[in-house]
Length: 339
Image (tube, rainbow, N blue to C red):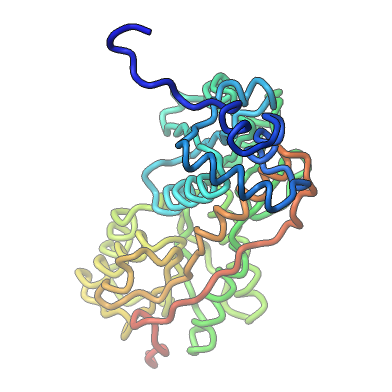
């Protein structure tokens, strides 16, 4: 030993010796094998804690052919929904003993789906999760031989990939039903970019629900998710429109609409009611506070990691379920005034 060498780190054989078991038993405890006597598992874990033993992850990966790492491809690292989903996946993965490596796609196409997959597989990920995908990216992924389980967070089932999602269709249904029950019979939808699968799911559900209510089906307005878009659109309205309510595909655009209508001389909700989608932490502080659809990103992250773990570890994959949404009714919606 050299003069500046630190104390020798504990190893798996020391843990086994003190616990009175074989090193294979220690390995099985570390890898959460089910058929271990509870008293043995507890004794091994106590020794691990006492020695402050940290397993050699590289050695474990070689032995199990797993790195316990999930790769995440995220289409946009600036929008609230995608970043919230990424954080939820990271939290759920950490709770399950996995780490996460992420790579963000860019609007300028400087990173292709192939580049993103190559970046993650070079790190030896056990599985890949695709967050907030565009239809073009999913189509590109179908052409790539990836070699690990892939889960796409999207509303519809998929013949190629595992899927989980928030119930986008029901969220849009709640928004339309709320406005219709207030008495609105002419509702405008400001959609997100329709290459985004979530935006498309909300747009389809909107059309389906207004048809069911017998509400006028007017052309939608396709936005870009930004508050600036909502503001510019509403600021350009020169007279009180025929529609009495707007369902915006996210809260950012809803915020811009509230601001723009105010500057154009119209009151929310007296002249126009507005519903958003996401429930940003600040949405309850808008003026007026925003009625919106709340997505449970924590539950979405847990479900995504559960499905990927099952696929990686050869377990039965949990039944596909959509994560429930909730309508948060606040002051941006009211019955329409007679015109």
